[in-house]
Length: 321
Image (cartoon, rainbow, N blue to C red; front, side, top):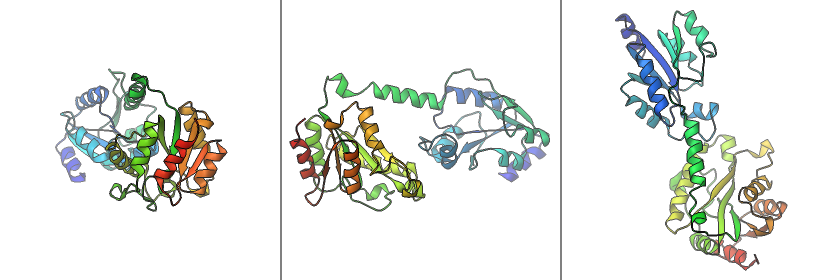
């Protein structure tokens, strides 16, 4: 890359540079990149790495991994070169290549860009492209979430729920693998599908409540956690089982948060989200921490124990609702 930049400068060509996450490519991205390309002979686009996006946007982002985001951006006619940006800010790359133009999309002014002064010091210029579309990746994500929230088959069919079952994940639904982050190691415990089907057929809604301190300890990422859940959902969907939501605590024990079980804040949040009273909320888990969390929230609790999950599900069904 260094040699390519040096060669273009030797040819007297004007190089433009821009950067971003480009998580969900939309019309605003395409418009601004096309306009940026019109200002220079070659346009370099630096795509934020997955780690940097998680740091400066949201630990649940990006939606698309960095190699796919780079692939999509590289497919645009306006883009000549795509590179990965590991840092949150573009300053190291700007100082390394010293492009003639540092270009950003709407939402900024040239004076608000923290790297603008350094660009001007080496003789470069800063340009901000005004947006023509009121779109953003965050806005798209919000709209998708809103549409999903209004597209619940249960509401459309008039189905009502008799209660809420909050399920521990590791050791309750799947084999407990320390710091599980590999989807290939997901293994349903015996008779879990049968028990979940019975709960679901009885009109109980299902959600997961799980401690994941491996995230806080740095053993795996939120994206790894989501990948494991995706494998679990695929296994369960083959039996017609739907998990409505996943609540998780990413903190380590040392952080002393209120959400980590035996703390009850994940459970009270779930009851609030589903508008379900404690007397119609059940917690199924394999540990004393699960039981303590449920009891602290006023819920009915069932320990899987040696009898296994199906017996625990039947115990829930024996409770009056």
